[in-house]
Amino acid sequence: MRENAPDDTQMATNPHWGGTTPRYSEMRRMLSVFVGRPLPVIGLVIIVGLILMAIFAPLLAPYPPNQMDIPNKLQPPNSQHLLGTDSLGRDTLSRIIYGSRTSLIIGFSVMGISSVAGIVLGLMAAYFGGAIYHVIMRFMDALMAFPMLLLALLVASLLGSGMLNVIIALGIGMVSAPCRLMCGVVMSVKQNDYVLSAQAMGMSNSRIMFQEILPNAFPPLLVMITIGIGAVILAEAGLSFLGIGITPPTATWGGMVNDGYKFIISHPVLAISPGVAIMLIVFGFNMLGDGLRDALDPKLRGVI
Amino acid sequence: MTTYILRRILMGVIVIFVVTVMVFLFIRLLPGDPLTIYLNKTDIQQLTDEQLQELRVKFGLEKTLPMQYIDWMGGLFRGDFGQSIYYDIDVGILVRERMPVTLYLGGLAFVISGVLGISFGVICALKRGTWIDTVVTLLANIGVTMPSFWVGIILIYLISVKAGWLPVGGYISPFENFWESTRRILMPVTCLSLFSIASLTRLTRSSMLEVIQQDYIRTAWSKGLKERLIVTRHTIKNALIPVVTVVGVQVAFIFGGSVLIESVFNINGIGRLATQAVQNQDYLVVQAITLIMAIMVVISNLIVDISYGWLDPRIRYD
Image (cartoon, rainbow over all chains, first blue to last red; front, side, top):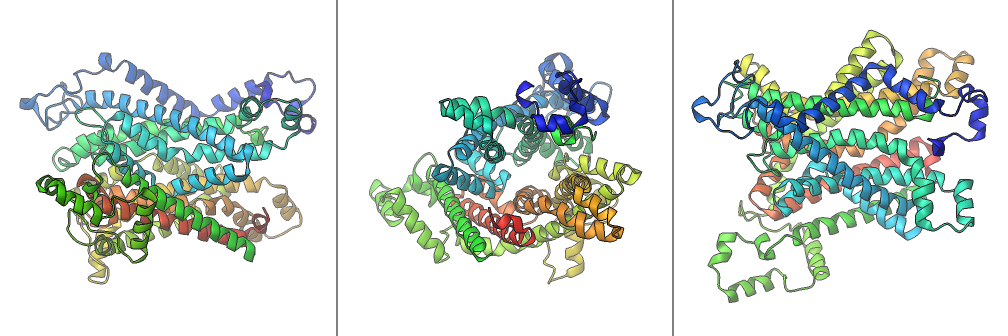
């Protein structure tokens, strides 16, 4: 955390940065803010739990996710099938457990791709300024004008279905947020003395951008990516609900809600249970993101 | 102020231009024969090569991409969006017919979420630490995690199927039968506005809490101003600045939500038309809807930007 240490004026005015305080206390402070309140910890537990569930799905799921059993179709919840079976006799609980894989893979890879692309574009736009800035930012403005779901629908319809294409479709929709965030941070720090001195020392542009400027944006980016994963999972659920994107029989929570919708009158648990799973995972990421924001925000130092 | 407005309008026009180029390219970059945009795949198979060539010339597909773009834009200005290959009618007519439904539902959801979201956020911040704050904040945190289509299904199950209070779906124009129309849109509008209410509550609350800590609020208190004045004039006015910036995002989000909600509640609006058009590979319809929605988002952003410069004088000078 040395890069993020506050400058001298802040240390002098803030009682938490007195001369006697050892340097590593900042890390400890963040940890105590994060752990000190229940919601972020609950969020972290939910996410770690779901990741473990996705990894060990074959061990946890009582049945294979796509194993059809037509004679036992549309069973109500019972001791054999805790959440019942769907119209093809597949075990709902097993499909929910396997569905976590789809959601997590898509959530992480979409945010991974879009934040790398967004960070690079945002850095370039703000650091070089001028024409490059205008071209990139007007392009991002245009991208933001499309409703995310419609954009994903359009891209997925062009590329066809499949997990990779869904990742690309949602990734394009998510680029503008990290790009704008990055651009804002760079604009505010690029006039700082240490950037000017790096330029005066003859450091290359890319080295200044990635070594001197990028670390400043790290806390807000981390928060944005965490909450973004939740947003991506929600959007993917919407796409699967519309039957666009990931092809059956792969288990997706959105697709399961859609399948269950047809039997809502007789078997409400089919549509309701995958929705609870979606809520849980998005709640986890949102709470983790909020907790990180409070822990990492230097403005809240000493307030919480 | 005039230069600020002119600059914003110019930027808006540039963004709309980029939007049109993107929408145009999306459709042109479709894999396969571009003729499939204008004709059914089965029709194409029945035609001879010569006829296909003729059709290519007719639709201007032999020209370069920039020329095709100019042709297309010229058509748009004349109100010509092309012909739907699935419905076999003019896309402009189709969209004009479905648009009011989505605008009505979306407009209601927009107003409701703005009023409720901001009020809840303000109340939470003023009563921070009390049980009202805890309950509303928790509900808002849950509200932003619920998929709208799923909430719709649960509402249908509980309110229509179990209780039998409201019809399952469908849409009737409010001019035809206001009472029946309102009964039908109650659930869809709730679903459309739920996420926005919850996210605006969260945003307003945190923005209020940040403003409350500012020095000028302490100054206002120490000057002996009345509490009501401090809250309305000093706190809320400043706290709403970041809230106003997300109006454009809300518009885009409600449009996106209408794609899902109209499918759940069987409403023939523009969102459902978009899904059906994607499934039917009716690309000119998809193109028209995407373009119209994006332009409306750009325009609402423009209005926000201009009113923003008027609300917050600092913005005008950067």
